[in-house]
Image (cartoon, rainbow, N blue to C red; front, top):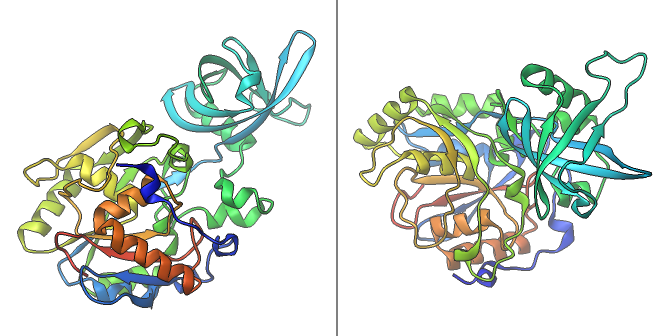
Length: 362
């Protein structure tokens, strides 16, 4: 499909720079399979779930994946910023580099500076550029395993999306605000933002409704923020992300569907890992590995009936996924309504609840 079909204009003042306080005070636009749009609140989510349904959330935890350092070569020094996006081994990460034009294979980058007060191993973090492909590089670090994790925690910053970071400075609040209540397994470099809306009170109300909450893992990569530069979706390359669906969760979701219950996904990341783990027969199976699934209109959904998601960037793969789920024209109409009604957009913004266009109406 033509990528320009997924474009729309968003006023700058609709981009949320802070989350709602409390988190479940955010607004919720309900986009049903038929009928009128409903302006509700995230706290109303339990009303749209039924006893026996399942809600699937992503338990990935965001790491401070943005690193600033310097590259020394002969008599020249260049400041380099990288955003880690996918771990490739105990001592290796793929990353987006800026400015990439100042790097070549074999260059060494030092992140942080050694000092007498710093622990010997963690005073500085060195890496070598092993591969380079346009703005993406493969880094080989001087540390491995837990030592590398600790060094990244020490020197890195929370990787706020560019549409937030370009408008204000990062502060201590973001270390809390950009993690979900379910955050557990370290590895994401972007938050699964639909789950940023959850509070203990909302979780309690959902469980009291008779809905079981299940956890899966998809380590969200920084590629989620990359614009689709191709003119047609068939020419776009998705970056792979690592995910896990346990045998127990797969079995429970299959039982939910067998009983007539519905599966609701909190966020596009939960949906993508579930669709990756579900076969053409509709059965969800245990999954552990990379997925680069790219969902656009025409895709036949197998695993998910309801999608809770934030409002996404134009021409983004996430907007394309949402359009595939509920239909492009209904989604465009809903976004136009949201803009007119001053909903807040993107990672720290409001949410919408989508019904699958071939069933599963909330």
